[in-house]
Image 1: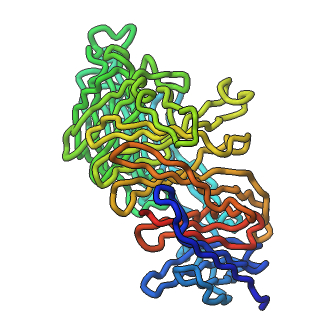
Image 2 (image 1 turned 180 degrees about the vertical axis):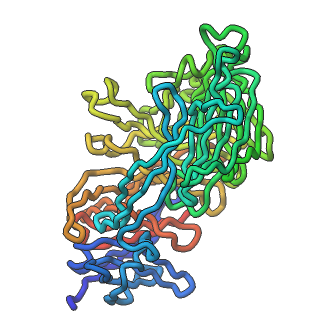
Image 3 (image 1 turned 90 degrees about the vertical axis):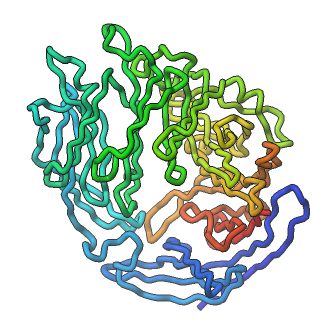
Length: 528
């Protein structure tokens, strides 16, 4: 076996206020491993070991691996080759094989908005190019469900349940001459299995017509082990021709939580301070936090003035649901974000949240109860983006609220990388609380470029991404300077799939490689 080269560097923090790496190391891997792909890193803290497993060859029913072993201080312990059956690969269904099929439900609506269900045959075939199953879908027979009164349903939204193959559907009971608004007042929560058998039908009645402002379910994650609850926010409908049928208060929202078996667990009235509330959901423990841009009064109805990309709100609103009731509702004027703007010391201008739609990357609740949203401003295709060619992601903004939803600060960051390739995709971000709970480390992954390389003979894009980290003082609501890691003579970049390693508490561990992928890079950053 070719002798590997091992380089090791250790250094300690010099400055008290700036984040530093406490240790970093590099190690060269073989050509076979470099031409393959990193299957997974395994951390065994009990035995002080880390194993990086590379797939080097895959033919028929066998897969060859190269396993690099290190201790948790990145000292190289050895390498060995193994061969396993393909069923050992993560994500591969040993009980199903290379190709398998399953039945599920496809949810559609016709031109009249009528709910239509179809059985669908999902065919899956393993693909080594990306390490997962390719999916093809064949549509089968269809069904137009009806209520007990014989009325068809008007489709509103649905949530697929990947684990069980069932589907939860929210649909209105279609109206007629006697009650033309019924489909927006008499709402059904339906559940069907893959054979189109109805498993549940629960009715939610409203006095006034309703519009779905937001819906959220964790079942968008195909790896979810259980079917999740569905969170729905209803908003009153209003406008021309509705007259007295509309709710006079456009901010009279209703939060509904539906269980995985389609039972209504919670129905809570939410008195929104303003008329437009373009909501998103985040779960914090057992609580639900809803947030988004909101308008200035209670007379604008969401269905009349949707919060599209051109919409510019006057406020940013937060609602927290806890213990079956509203814990708080706050609306922060957009002008306050500029007043409470903070920037890193070396940055002159502050990018601000302007009230437009905003892509949230991560939300965290700290040990002192503060809530922080970090995300990114963007310009969409159709005129706002460069030459209208697609979405452009621009400045990064973090909103810092206290435990009751009051704004403490806004942190605006000009990205280090702003060329065309960097603007194509949003920046991944990581928020990590310090050991003493007084600070927050904010890591932004900056994209310096894109490289084409081959893995097991297939061409694949590799994004050249490096970490850029700043420290936030939670009590004072101030931000320090960003420090780049991995950027130097060799230019190391974090692994696209595994940029961080979970090794011990109280530190962030980066995993990366150089541009060619031949040399591994490890780095520890203590969370002092």
